[in-house]
Image 1 (cartoon, rainbow, N blue to C red):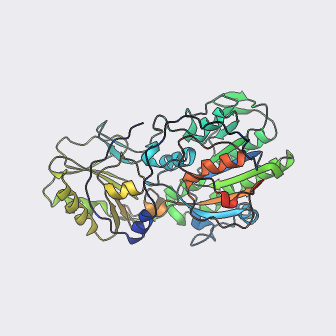
Image 2 (tube, rainbow, N blue to C red):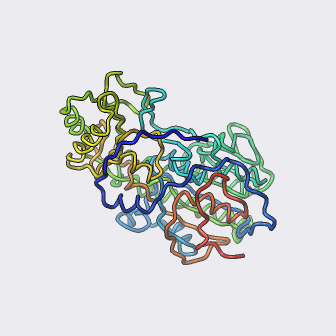
Image 3 (cartoon, rainbow, N blue to C red):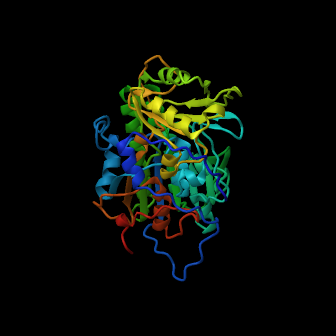
Length: 447
């Protein structure tokens, strides 16, 4: 599973906080082949009989503690925290949903799984928004559990569809009911009650409660994208996803399995507001170099062959690929210096920075991140919206609670990369074979 080598341009970032984070993160060796780990001579401990994972898209940790903690009460989430362990976990960069969720599902960073968002693909000569790609040989938790004869149901947790889970497969069931969080929770409750669920138009009965149930909800993310943190519908969206925790816990209690079930709650990324456009200023200043600058659409736009600075712009990042005369180390340094001079720019990440953050090699020569509430999208109407993709949004809540979890343990130095291994440790199975994450053993009770 050889990975392409990114061209090396050396341009320094300007964000001190980012440098501190990068210094704490080292690039691991290349992933081992995706072969099963050797059989253990002794059975693995199994602190929980099953795990239920809630993955709330866009659930910023500041909804729990911080600036937005008063938007909604979140009684069910706070009950899990009080009874278990809580911390703010590192996500991955760029902090787009599919790439971040691939980190959760595989226990690897984008440098390994290579799911990438909002970039220019040299291979196809087109802009890319988000993708479902996973590098061949990188194992998901769905593939790992299947290999170890454990069962699971992934309720609209799309990242594992066709990567270990499928419509109609009772052992590794994928469903896509649509609707809001309540609709996905309805399916979790049905499974806990021993009832069949709709999987791609077919009613499937897994025969027994799955060892892992994942519930994906995007209610909060949708509201934030539309209207930002001031959205009138945000309190209701937060209350709705929180209520599903309570409903599913009640169903586990009714099924007589609450005491043997562990709960994991996390997200893919946080969010930041954006209202003030920076892209026109960035483009104007770069045009002053005499190089040809073009902004292309992430939905498949193709640049003119003569364009030397190709920008895929999103609200919280701009991916920049240098071509022709622009494709030299000296030009890269100059272009980064010009972009840094624009008020509202937080950081310019070069190849070295991106490698330290274990970002995908598919990203361009430079990635730019603005300060909130500035943005790099093509919209200029000033309407309040929320988005993600930058390093500032690459932090998420992580709650561990229930069977096998110690109460009152603050979680430190944890990340989304550790979730798959933690679920494996709770279920008494090996993590995905290519995982680089570690089980959060500080919070897991010893059997």
